[in-house]
Image 1 (cartoon, rainbow, N blue to C red):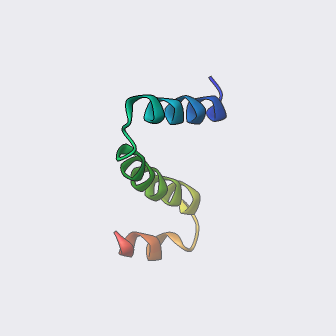
Image 2: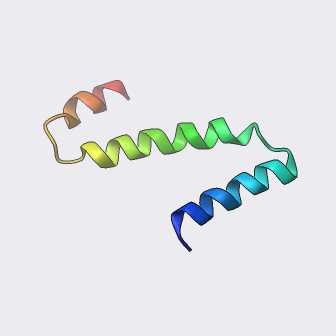
Amino acid sequence: MSKPKILIEFWEFLKYRKKFWLAPIVIMLVLPSVLILLTEGSAVAPFVYVLF
């Protein structure tokens, strides 16, 4: 399953079930995860971990 398809399916789920309150929760879980993955092994990593 491709990533865009997962996003489209998730959006359709939110629309159909009227669960729009889930979107901010998912975004706030995904953003720090992506930030940690992108800065892993770089010189910026110690500064990012201070934020958490």
